[in-house]
Image (cartoon, rainbow, N blue to C red; front, side, top):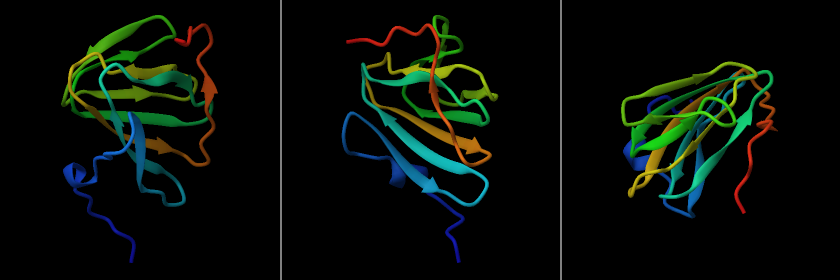
Length: 120
C-alpha cells in the first residue's frame, strides 16, 4: 500500500543549498518539499500545461508573479500558479525557507520565465 500520511517536519531535506524531496508521485500529481537556503532561489519558470500550488511552511521569501514582479510570502501563505503563469521564489530571509508543492497533471513540463535575468 502506498504511503498516504506524511510528516512535513520529518521530511524537510537537509542536503545542499536548494533541494527538492519528492514526497509522493502517483499517476496524476507530484508532491514535493523544497528546502531553499537564505539567499538562494527556485528560479522563476513556467509550466505550460500544469498547475503548481505552493504552501509556505517555514521562512520568508519573495514570490515571483511575473519575471519582474514579486510579493512577500510567509508561513501559512498559499501561492497558486495556473498553466502558463510565471512563478518562482527567492529566500530573502535569514533562515531556511520550506515550500510544500503540488503539481498536476503529469507529466510536468518546465520552461524558463521570459524576460527574467538569471543572476551570475
